Image (cartoon, rainbow, N blue to C red; front, side):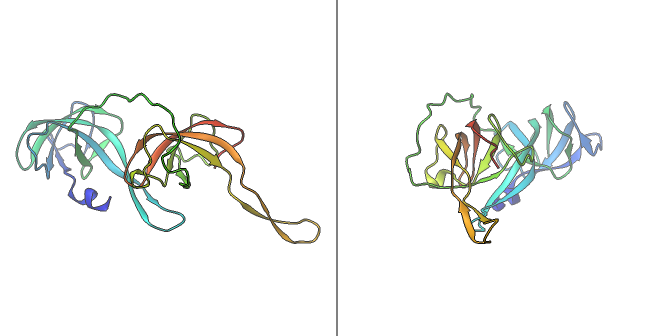
Length: 202
């Protein structure tokens, strides 16, 4: 959320005055308050998710740039990059890794609230037409009691159309077009993988 983005520690300088950093490079960071934490994720703000129905801000996606270990405490502290997936730059943020978690085993199930309804917000690769094994972000999260392992039915939207003969407005009804398995949840947003579809998902 916006507050987490404001208080996150951030990269201020390269150890050798480098502006673009990669694996094994050292750098300085400010804002690390808990000096007992030794491992960090390095990220930058990505897409800002907004609920298309209510207009509510759902938060910013964190783009994972790499991992870093603390070498020397202080303000600024000195760290080294242990893994790099994209270039790391000045002003990129850090998030402490307090617990290393293994990939979970899922027991697919229906959500606790069978009346819950949401929408697909986006896909990481910006694709507009999706199919099986596509990853999607949805506007449902922990506050709606969505849990990892929940299976959601994907339905097409009710679409207005115009009759080709008399011009009357009619609607193409909602149709069941696939299933999605939730694998990661946050307060207002979750990520799911499309496991099955009988036509393109949008």
